[in-house]
Image 1 (spheres, rainbow, N blue to C red):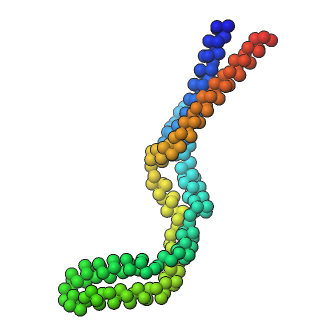
Image 2 (image 1 turned 90 degrees about the vertical axis):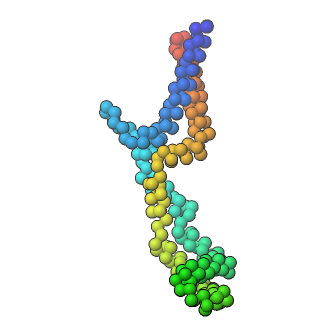
Image 3 (image 1 turned 180 degrees about the vertical axis):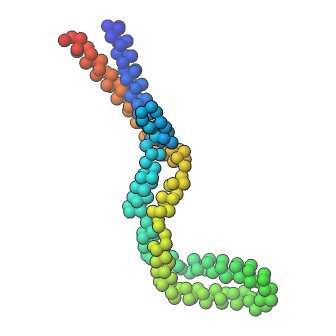
Length: 208
C-alpha cells in the first residue's frame, strides 16, 4: 500500500511538473526566440516575431475599422465646436501677439511706433471675425485635407514596426501577468489530474 502511495505521489508530482512546464514553455514560445533558430531538421521562432507583419496588419485594420479612424475623428471635428472664441483667442495671441513682436519688431524696431497694443488687438479682432464667419468652410477644408493626406492604418503599422520585440513582450507580459500565471497553474493542475487518471487506469489494468 505504501509503495502505491509513493508511486501515486511521484506520478502526480511529475504530471504537475510536466503540465506546468508545458504551458510555461508555450507562453515563452509566443515571443522567444526573437530570431529564427535552425535545429537539425526544423526551424523555430517565436509565434509573434514570426508573424509580426501579419499581426500588425490585422491589429491596425481592426483598430481603424472598429475603434478609431480618420473619418471618425473628422466627424467629431464637424460635430464639436472646435473653432470657438477661446481657441481663437489663444491661437491669435500666439500667432499675432508673440510672433509679431518677436519677428517683425526685432527686424523693424520702427514699426513699434505704428503697431502698438491697440492696433494689434484690432488686427486680432479682424482675423477672429473673418475666421468665425467662415468657420464651417475652414473646418470642411481641414477635414478634407485630413481624410486625403492622413493614412491612420499606415501610421499605426509604422509605429508597430518600429516597436522593439523586447518592449512589446514586456508590455504584454506586464498587462497579462496574472492571466498567464493562471495558465501555468492550470497546466500544472491538469497535469496532476491526468496523472491521477493514469494511476487508477494502471491499477485497473493490473486487476484484469
